[in-house]
Length: 96
Image 1 (cartoon, one colour):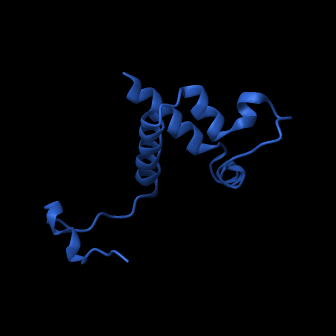
Image 2 (image 1 turned 30 degrees about the vertical axis):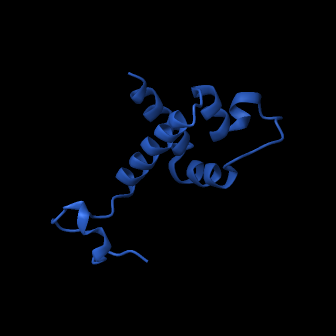
Protein backbone atom coordinates (compact mmCIF):
# COMPACT_ATOMS: atom_id res chain seq x y z
CA UNK A 1 0.00 0.00 0.00
CA UNK A 2 1.22 3.47 -0.86
CA UNK A 3 0.80 6.29 1.61
CA UNK A 4 2.00 9.87 1.91
CA UNK A 5 5.15 8.78 3.70
CA UNK A 6 6.11 6.13 1.13
CA UNK A 7 9.71 6.94 0.16
CA UNK A 8 9.54 5.12 -3.18
CA UNK A 9 8.05 8.30 -4.66
CA UNK A 10 10.88 10.63 -3.70
CA UNK A 11 11.63 11.26 -7.38
CA UNK A 12 8.40 13.29 -7.72
CA UNK A 13 9.98 16.36 -6.11
CA UNK A 14 6.84 17.52 -4.30
CA UNK A 15 7.51 18.85 -0.82
CA UNK A 16 4.16 20.39 0.14
CA UNK A 17 1.38 19.14 2.35
CA UNK A 18 -0.77 16.20 1.26
CA UNK A 19 -3.60 17.22 -1.04
CA UNK A 20 -6.97 17.58 0.62
CA UNK A 21 -9.66 15.17 -0.52
CA UNK A 22 -11.98 17.03 -2.87
CA UNK A 23 -14.69 14.81 -4.35
CA UNK A 24 -15.69 17.32 -7.04
CA UNK A 25 -12.09 17.84 -8.20
CA UNK A 26 -11.47 14.10 -8.09
CA UNK A 27 -14.50 13.45 -10.33
CA UNK A 28 -13.28 16.10 -12.78
CA UNK A 29 -9.74 14.70 -12.92
CA UNK A 30 -11.05 11.16 -13.37
CA UNK A 31 -13.27 12.35 -16.24
CA UNK A 32 -10.34 14.10 -17.92
CA UNK A 33 -8.26 10.93 -17.66
CA UNK A 34 -11.12 8.80 -19.00
CA UNK A 35 -11.48 11.09 -22.02
CA UNK A 36 -7.72 11.17 -22.57
CA UNK A 37 -7.38 7.38 -22.48
CA UNK A 38 -10.39 6.98 -24.77
CA UNK A 39 -8.51 9.11 -27.29
CA UNK A 40 -5.35 7.06 -26.84
CA UNK A 41 -7.37 3.92 -27.58
CA UNK A 42 -8.56 5.58 -30.78
CA UNK A 43 -12.22 5.82 -29.82
CA UNK A 44 -14.59 8.27 -31.45
CA UNK A 45 -16.94 10.41 -29.38
CA UNK A 46 -19.87 8.17 -30.38
CA UNK A 47 -17.96 5.06 -29.31
CA UNK A 48 -17.22 6.70 -25.97
CA UNK A 49 -20.91 7.61 -25.61
CA UNK A 50 -21.77 3.95 -26.30
CA UNK A 51 -19.35 2.75 -23.63
CA UNK A 52 -20.73 5.20 -21.08
CA UNK A 53 -24.41 4.47 -21.82
CA UNK A 54 -25.36 2.10 -24.68
CA UNK A 55 -29.07 2.80 -24.17
CA UNK A 56 -28.53 6.49 -24.91
CA UNK A 57 -27.07 5.53 -28.29
CA UNK A 58 -29.39 2.62 -29.22
CA UNK A 59 -32.56 3.41 -27.25
CA UNK A 60 -34.11 2.16 -24.02
CA UNK A 61 -34.89 -1.27 -25.51
CA UNK A 62 -31.20 -2.03 -26.06
CA UNK A 63 -30.38 -5.11 -23.93
CA UNK A 64 -26.85 -4.15 -22.85
CA UNK A 65 -25.63 -1.90 -20.08
CA UNK A 66 -22.15 -1.02 -18.94
CA UNK A 67 -22.27 1.15 -15.82
CA UNK A 68 -25.85 0.65 -14.62
CA UNK A 69 -25.04 0.78 -10.90
CA UNK A 70 -22.92 3.92 -11.28
CA UNK A 71 -25.58 5.59 -13.43
CA UNK A 72 -28.38 4.77 -10.97
CA UNK A 73 -26.31 5.99 -8.01
CA UNK A 74 -25.43 9.26 -9.70
CA UNK A 75 -28.96 9.94 -10.93
CA UNK A 76 -30.17 9.43 -7.38
CA UNK A 77 -27.38 11.53 -5.84
CA UNK A 78 -26.95 14.29 -8.45
CA UNK A 79 -30.11 14.14 -10.54
CA UNK A 80 -28.05 13.21 -13.59
CA UNK A 81 -25.51 10.67 -14.83
CA UNK A 82 -22.65 12.97 -13.83
CA UNK A 83 -19.79 10.77 -15.01
CA UNK A 84 -21.19 10.68 -18.54
CA UNK A 85 -21.54 14.46 -18.64
CA UNK A 86 -18.08 15.12 -17.18
CA UNK A 87 -16.32 12.65 -19.48
CA UNK A 88 -18.00 14.01 -22.61
CA UNK A 89 -17.31 17.61 -21.54
CA UNK A 90 -13.65 16.67 -21.00
CA UNK A 91 -13.61 14.98 -24.42
CA UNK A 92 -14.98 18.12 -26.06
CA UNK A 93 -12.52 20.37 -24.18
CA UNK A 94 -9.59 18.21 -25.31
CA UNK A 95 -10.78 18.44 -28.91
CA UNK A 96 -9.57 21.96 -29.46
